[in-house]
Length: 509
Image (cartoon, one colour):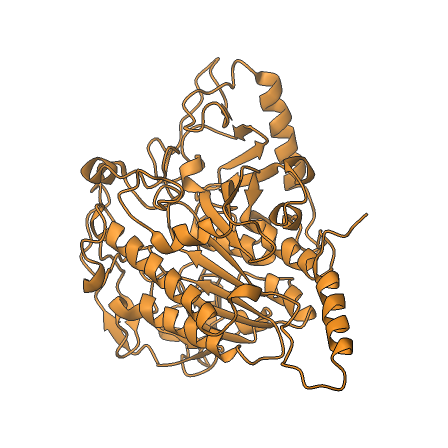
């Protein structure tokens, strides 16, 4: 049987080319192993991208172009509907609820979530000779250095910022988890401390303070929207408006530095947008018909274009796999849908934080010239946790990495050499409040009633004789309007048992 992995074939061809050219001068051969650039948007909705939703009030020409030249997945899911656990799953291939964080997200001072020595996409790729870099939003925790005599702060859920010694390097940042280079924002752009960390050392001490932006009451339908950020410590000169373009410049610069490298590279570029604060620059004001959010999405799309242009400028486009996705669904309240007539989740129910598909169904696009057929669409059910295993098989390694418990390689799908029957179609969903769901083929089961996140009702107590959970047919009812739980108790029970068995799997570090 012919191998699904193209790398050995490419390496053999390169060797023959070299032998044939012995005795005459040859140009430096192209690296056989492809570079990998993972561009992760923050809170971008499935329905925001015009390639997925032609009726979107926002145009995303750069992302649309990427889709036209690669494969677009229509049934891809973040492993959680909020930031930290989703990012944990992407980089480790493990559902975050198997870690110490069972629900919710870390704050800016939260400790490192990835365990010491745990496998990540970066550690896997370093084994195959890759340079590795993490640029952008981290939000997976940092072990901040504590001032001498203030160790009692370690007993708190997260340290008091007044007890942190910002002059000393952080511990357990990206550089401890497989990344050679890192330039990060510690958490979301609306969470202190507002500063940058380069290779585990702060670029400036956050000894200034911001009172935060305008904050609406929590019962306001547009609470935590617009130019929203929280009060807290800030580095001198930190400019909220420049964070997105600044981090994009860092990514573009890194790509340029790799042009003449003998090694392939992996760049994990995690944009802080379009998460709040929504801060479109003047160039993008009025670019969309969805307020500041729409304009910020348009700006985010343009930053994707800058990264793609950098690959082409440096002659790296043809030998680079570009992966684009979002960490979860959009923060888009019903009042905003009504105001702008923009459906940020498309036809899918709910929003960020929810167990419903609007919370975790995300755009996923992969471009690999010469290997991924341009313009393809895949309807397989897949999870962002699949990065680790895919990177392994791509380089001739196993399609299952033991330590990446919840990661399955989708390389056969990318290469067009397998159909949906060859890829596991059972994935687990998790809401911000810790509500679980499971997807198996066209069926979805949710353990409980309500959204489990931000949408109303968050939770519902089961009525006597009523459904205990939610069962939806996602093929015939993608908007999750008809609960089949009472009609099909056998299917509901079978999915519930499958979910229990997945929860019981042991993680190997």
